[in-house]
Image 1 (cartoon, rainbow, N blue to C red):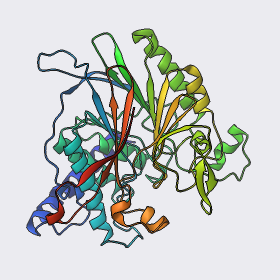
Image 2 (image 1 turned 120 degrees about the horizontal axis):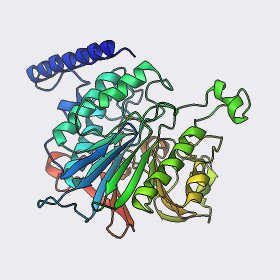
Image 3 (image 1 turned 120 degrees about the vertical axis):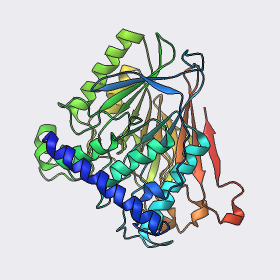
Length: 409
């Protein structure tokens, strides 16, 4: 990845976007269709969060009071997933694919402006169009307009590389603005974006440590022998040994500096333990298994985890710091369950450009759970998770376009 080539490519992307914005203005917002950064209604929200320290594998942040001291009050994290921005989507309901791209982004922006989170985390599959590198910069520019710190965990629909130039360039595009907390992470690890965000509670203590992982896409044949899998093994990917070992090492380093700190993991593909919450199948439906406490939501499709369990949950739960895992990937599963002392949470799907309960069950759009998930870090260390549903109504009906579905502590 030659730095000159990368620099020139990014300059080219910036030029494309600059010209596109001029055309967008001249056509009254009708062209070009891919320019969601101009169609989402973004306005400055701002944040009292500041970066305290940073390196290649972690960022430490804190929210500050006007007097300059660290704010020990509630800290809000908005998670969004599976927006599936794709101008060539095969799904045809409700207008063109580009129109639905804009609808997904209006949902996101509306929720950010309404909920005013301290941090936004995307759990993958946001950009999958032919303009992925451009869309990555667009997303960064959009978040800069909002003025909110954010981070991104890769999904399985981003560039079809484990660690290639185009995937690198896409992640580099996220870092176009200063509010992006993304770090490439240890180069010895699988993929890009394995890094930690530490949130301070005071000058000497941490409130929470957030770990983001690249969970890959599909099992690759060249890795099968390393994990004792059949040479023709198919299925979704899994966290690798080196990623798990890195997490355990980082937790111990953090404990040495700050004492015991609970952690939250963010990844796109759910770990296999999600499949323990319900029994059933796509044909006959799903019922609670009795192995977990279901706090809200349900299962409406088979958990899209890997057929191979690489052991992240057992290792992280056994270590004792893991408090929750947030995943995306399964668009119509939306539960939060307490399993073996760990919250397993599906980030609420926000993509109008992909399959939903409209397709799976014939639900009207107004009943579907398009939206985001809001997690509040409480001062006592507990979590409050809320499904934040969104409905885009006609102008005369817009008394309240967003509402809360469920809340658990």
